[in-house]
Length: 459
Image (cartoon, rainbow, N blue to C red; front, side, top):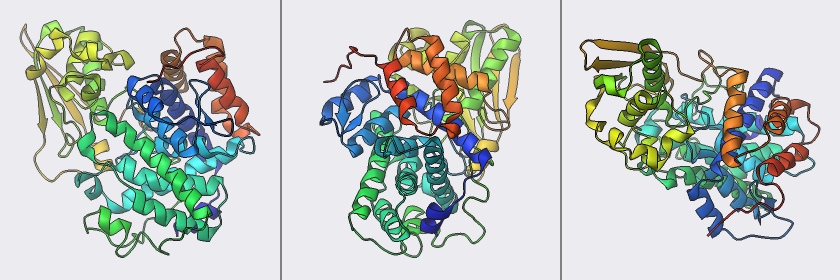
C-alpha cells in the first residue's frame, strides 16, 4: 500500500502551495537552530568530508548524507518552533525536509520534486500515526522520531524515484530503525531525535537501493502497527486513505506562532490576550490557573524549569513569561530569561489543572479549549478561553506573519542579515513550485546566512 502510494501519488496544486509554506517555515527555524550550542556541539562531533559531501548552511563544512541529515534535523527542532500535526501528535515537516535536503540529487531537483517529496513523506508519517491513535504517544514514544523515520524514508523514496520493490524494502528497514522516547523531552536529545529520524531515512533508502531486502509487509500483523501501539492496532484501518486528501490540504499543519511545545500555545494566546485587553502585568497578578483538557498536560513535564530547554515544556513558565514580557518569542527561551528571580520565585503561583475523565487523543486534544484565569492582587479575576489552535487553519499564520517569522529566524542565524535579501529569498521559497531547480535558492540561503569568510565555531 505505502509503496504504491509513494510511487504513484499525484500531488495537487493546493497541497504543493501548503508544502511550500511548510518548507519555508521549517527551513527558517532550521537556519535559526543551526547556531544553537547543542547543534554546534553535534557539528563538532561529525566527520567532515570533501567536495562530494553535503554542504552545511552555516559554514563551508561538508558531511556525509546521513550526517548532514542528522545535523539539519537537530537544527530544525532544537528551538521547538517547527510545525505540528495533532492528528499524530508529531512535528511532520522537520524530519522529512531534513532528509530531503541531505539527499536531494542537486541540481536535478526541481521545486515540484522537493514539494512532492515533502507532501508524500508527511502524508505517510501522519497517516501512520493516525492509524495507531494516541496510544503510541501515550506509551512514551516521541512520535516525531518514530513516525519521522518512516516519513523521511517515504519522502526520499519518492524523490529518488525508487521502484516499488526497493521502496517496500526501504520502508521495512525504516520500520526497524524507528526509535525515540518522550522521556527525553526538555533535553538536547529531543531535537537529536529528529536528526536521527532523518539520518535513518537516508540510510534506509541507501541500503534498500543497494539490495538489502526486508519484510514484504512490515506494518500489519506482527509489524510496526502492533509493536508501536502496544498491541492495540494490528491492521491498517479500512477507512483511512492516503492522499484523499493530503493532510497538508485538509486539515493542514499547525505552524507555530510561538517557539515552544504546541500544547503551550493556547495558554500563551489567552494570557497575551488578557495582557492586551486589561493592561495587567506580572506585578498585578497574585496567581494564575490554567484549565487544560484531559491528556493535555502530558508533554508539559517541567513545572519548575531551570533552563531554556526545560521551559519549552513548562506551563507555569509560559504564563509567567507572557505576563512579565507581554510577548513570547525566541528571546523568551534563553537560560537567562528562564532563571530570572522574578520568574523562578513565582512558579508556584501558577496552577495547571487537567480535566477529569478519559484522556483526549490526537486531534481532540488540539481542538479542546484552554482557559487561563488570573487572580489580581487588587481583587477580582480575569478569564480568557482559547479554542482555535494558533497557527491552524482556524487561526492561521498570515503570509505577513510567516514572513516576519522567517526574518526573525534568519536574523537569529546571522545578526545583521540584509533584510531585503531575506525578503526576496522568502518570496522565492513561497513560489518554489515554479522553480526549475532548487540549488540556486538553497545556495543563496547559505550565502545569506554564512557569507564567505564567516566562521562557524565547533568543538
